[in-house]
Length: 129
Image 1: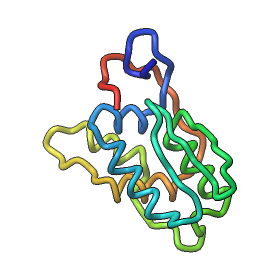
Image 2: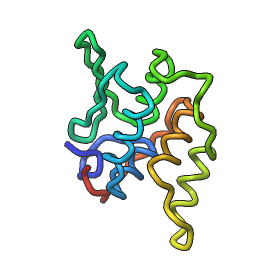
Image 3: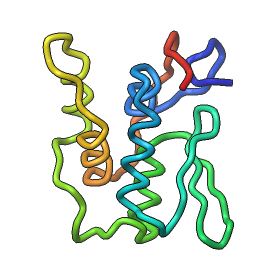
């Protein structure tokens, strides 16, 4: 069941934002670009899948948790993590109809630079995606 559907599970603010604004695919491609061929990322429903070259697959509920795993496993070189605005600030700015929406590259930079536990909140009425 999708996190945005009635009775769905709670997801992080960033995951909800990506689902609501149809940005999941673009962020997925940008994250894949940041890890190169060291692993393969995909989406399965409203979850994120990390597949290693050995065939091991891990499923993540939230994009922040996925980003944390990528950094922790050394798939993204910590010395060259992109500098970005804090994720919370980008998401707040995205809520302002007068401000331009952050692009996938900005969101990924913020995700990778600010790896930490996601803030979870129930989401209702968002589109699956």
